[in-house]
Length: 368
Image (cartoon, rainbow, N blue to C red):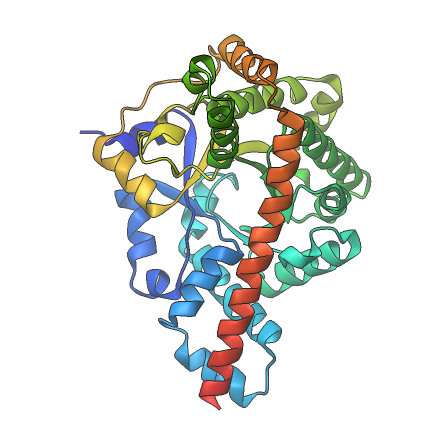
């Protein structure tokens, strides 16, 4: 019998695990998820590494060696995280080969403090790519204004990019434009376009969290009836943007030269409201050429009781537009919400990064 995750994959959604730790790698559990849960990639972020390294499991010997070598916390984090990502890339090498580079991907993020520093982002993206030294690594760059120019430059140099922290449809269009510009530059410099891949990570659950809070503040029955609808509407319309932007003449020429579409990725797909179905942001976002990166808890919920439709996006564009229009008519500003979520997203990762630095500093001191 086909389980729901296998059905999801067969319906065109790549399942990427939103978690990584050395214990998961060394125990064989990550490799096992490829067959048992149809997992075809991994994403990481500063919060994930803060959690896994903070627990210390599996990191003692490397931390001790780094302490003896006199490494700073920043240097130690660079060494530790790139080793985990390189090892995970090796585990997914077979998936990478069989999917012709679309899957088998492992993402590692530039330091969040560089979110508004184009040059710094480009420099670190290249350093991370060189250090991991695996073709199937993806470098995560946030979709801030400064990040857009960095995306173009990094793609132009032939490095695959996972664009993260996308909340608004307008910013998503800018991300796609930045990707296309990078591909055009790569083509002009003679790069093998077939080797360059990208995903655009559209954050889902946080949209509901913020808009639902505002709907409750409005307080009318009509406002309450719109709760938990904005995130799916926004994500579905992001997929419509994907279809539109990669059906344009400017893309046709690049595709003819071997370029790959930048696939939309649904991130932050664990529900925050316990009143909602724990599979909501997975089963209600099914369409071809999509990636869904999910925490293990959400992945297991889908495996256990998810009901996976063939497609739950492309027939619902009109409904999605009506949802956002209705919420806007209630005085809730879409632009204000998405700008706030981007700023908060960067800040949350900076906080996680600082926690990671503090825990690694403590571990280095203890190991001396």
